[in-house]
Amino acid sequence: MTGLPVPAGASTPGSRQPWPERLSAVLGPVGPARSLGPGLWRVAAEGRDLVVKVGDGVQDEAEGLRSLGRVSGAPPVPGVVLAEPGLLVSEWVDQEPRSTGHEEELGRRLASLHRAPWPEWGGGSSWVGACPVSPAVLPDGRSFYGARLLGLAARCGMVGAVSEVVERLDLLLPPTAPALVHGDLWWGNVLWGAGGRPWLIDPSVHGGHPEEDLAMLGLFGPVPERLLRAYDEVRPPENGREERVDLFRLAPVLVHAALFGGGYRRQAESILRRYA
Picture 1 (cartoon, helix red, strand yellow):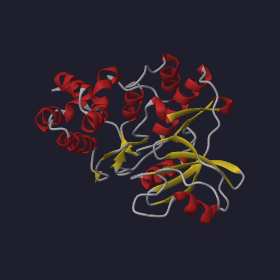
Picture 2: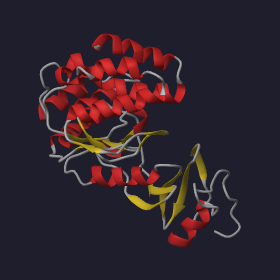
Picture 3: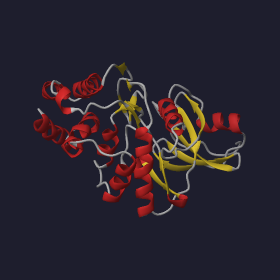
C-alpha cells in the first residue's frame, strides 16, 4: 500500500507497526481506510470490503466470532480474516433498514443459539467491551455469576451491596444448564443485514444463562414483542423469566458503572435493592 496515508491511531497494542502495513503484508494491496469510530476502519483488500479493529481483547473477540459461527442455526457473524494481538480483521456486512422480519429472525436464531448444548459455565472472553473480566471456568451457574458480579463490584466499590445478592443466587437463578451466550448483546452489536438476516458482532462469549442475552438486549432499547414470540416458539421461556430480567442486567450495568460511574451506579443500586 505504498503511497497511502497511515490512519491516525493505526498502530496495534504492543506493536509499533501500523496495521495497514501488516495487512498489506498478509493480504496484498489495501485500499484507503475509512474511519468507522475509534480504533475501527473499513478498507478494501483482496477485492472485498473488510473491517479492521485494533485494541485490547480483539483476539478474544475473534475467537468468540468463531464460536458463534460454529453453532447451527445461530445468528450469522462476520468471518474472521486475520486475528493477531491487538488486531482483528473481519468481513464487512452489507446492511439494510431494520424490519419486522429482521426482528423475528433474530428471535428464532438467538433461540437456536441458546438451545445448543454447551459444556461449561464461564470461560470465553476476558473482556466485556473495554472492561476486563475473568475467563475462569466454574462448576455451576451460582459460582459463575457470583464471581462475575463480585469481580465487577470490586471495580466500582460496591462489593458489600453486591455480596447480599450473591448470597441469594441459589434462590434467584433458574436451574438450567449453560448455553453459549453472546455476552454483550445490545442493539449496537446487531447488524440488520441484507435479505432480512440479523448479524451479531463484538461478542464477549462465555457459558451462561440464555436469559442473559435477552436481558442485555433490552438494556438500551425495548425488545419487540414479535422478537420474544419468535424466540419462545423455538425455546419456550422458563417460569419467572420476567422477574429475572433485572437480575441478568446487573452484570452489564456494573460494567458500565465501572467504566463510567454516574447514573449506571445508581441503576445498579436500584437493582441490588430489588434482589437483596
